Length: 99
Image (cartoon, rainbow, N blue to C red; front, side, top):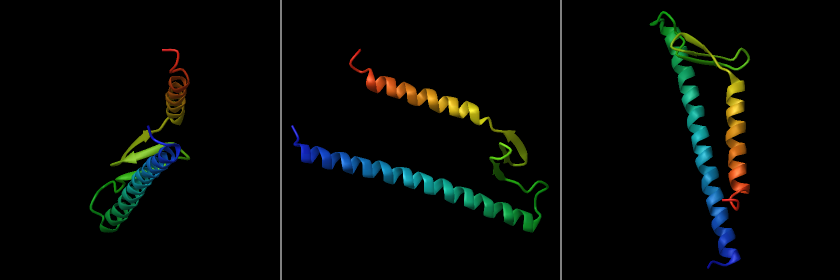
């Protein structure tokens, strides 16, 4: 059995580690996006491809361009998926005594 102080220290440490992992992943995605933007600019300057857009994300028009092909993003499906997945977690967390 651990004391309350030890348990609180352990929980704080776990939260700190989770926060650091999330920050690391977020920074990696930011660097990936910025790197792709620099590559796009270099391709335009060198004029080496017919369609110089490797990656472009436009949330206003809900479009993503990958290697010149345009895809439409349906954000409502993503919202519904996140709603159902998180509500299911809440039900499992609250209802664990019913099993």
